[in-house]
Image (cartoon, rainbow, N blue to C red; front, top):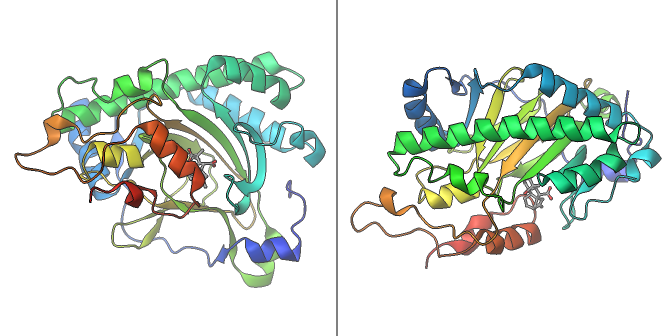
Length: 332
Ligand code: GA4
């Protein structure tokens, strides 16, 4: 079942391919949130070593997540002309193949949403015409649960780093003005190409996330890979019970480089659809992204210039997906 329109040869030559990834022996940190004392240290270690980890016992209802995923599957199963009515992405809505505004493309279709409840309500009318209220309430409840999980993770980070007060990081996402986004992704399989070349299509090319943290889940189809600091790519085993957590550029800046925003990418599977939903937690637009003073050792220099999230976001949205966005903000 290929839901995106059939690829033309032109499109296929633009979207990159890659041999199926080998599973490396490096194991991705899996952190049990029901043990907070141990979790604080493990979360900090994972953020330093990988910029990535998975969590279990996260408190998000699987029933709720499955119900929202079912709505996403329904939407992506509509005809292309129906789906196009919910687009284009300016800055929110349905998008197909084009990622961002600067020419990046991938074997993906997606819905990008603001986390603002009023905008979720408006978008629901375009996405779930038959029952917009059901879609709105599922997105709202899911966001509430995943935000709560994100706050908990940011408090564990604060504990592990001994930041005072404990809510230093979480208040940035909790703020009414927090500039966060939510995306539902569908990576359709492309069996034609797989059969021809044995290679998989790039769904979402290599990049880092600009925000503070990204918290997501997927169905059981593989595709997500992270880059280790020495540059090796590692496949993240897919499972729909745990959440994955990605350190974003903003958290790299706030920890003055102690945490690394992790490069990651997603491949489409040869035979099965991959669905994922990710919350990208960003601070209010006017927030300054400084190195946190209580982390700085005597005489330690800030690695970055002083800038606001608004300035960084503007610059990020002008960049290409694979660019090193933070290099423009390094201290001279
Ligand atoms: C990556 C993280 C989020 O998915 C996103 C992406 C955004 C988009 O899809 O429009 C960006 C990308 C992301 C980083 C650089 C710019 C902006 C595409 C792109 C080329 C919604 C986000 O906030 O930044």
